[in-house]
Length: 352
Image (cartoon, rainbow, N blue to C red):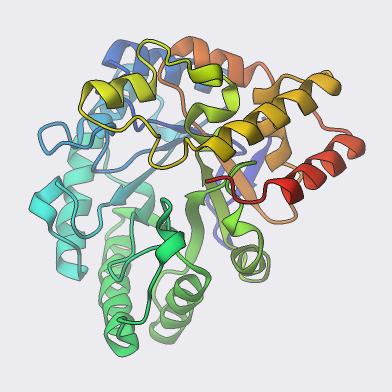
């Protein structure tokens, strides 16, 4: 597998990342270890986690379990030196830490917590999970209202957090700093403040990106290219929609929708499962059949055609799902297929 360097840093990672947000809930420790074994054997050395994981649902009594499962695997495998571990601090309003947000002091405490659960002395990439000022991620873009933001307060907050991050870097507890669910304005301001105070520079941004969700394609893509910020694309299969497993109203046992419904949820994949989204999925599957490509492999390979730095985060609740995704590592897309995907995107640009 190819290797990539995050942003302007010297942190080299595999060109695909394994997401672990289901570890400790839908994916038990044994299966989680098996997934990490398979990922490593396939050349993936980059693992992503967060202090709030596992998800679906996020619960205060399970938060941190995903990090613990990574930690037990690192101890069992003895592969810590070969791996790059990413995790995140939770934003404001989560059930984690009683809804506490973060500032510089809180961040330092949370770094220590993640280090303990991961069983390591350094986090390769430490990320801000959500902006404290709010975000348009997860379908909030339809009614996004930044009018109540205080610019000076936001920049002061950035400086406070960056100074704490710099202390963690100097102490050898984190290597690099990244964002998640951020905007183009926020990303460039984090960079500006870091340059002004000599703090750590943003090397990556973890935002949702797939054939069905392409908000990144304009302003953030320009930031990614000109500021050398690598996109870590989460939900590249649109939370399973692009696999086709939910076609014709199907709800497979142990699927994300099934688990969500069992816990009193709406079964709409965080707002992704809409009538227009299902129509778009059908269209992409028809296009894949026409070109003789597996639709899962097409969706993942397409990310490699994008004109900005991007690393997909693979997510699987079972070992078989991960095997299917990894079986398409060598799949390439023809120019005709890429052009056809562009045409289809114009027909259904924002299906959810």
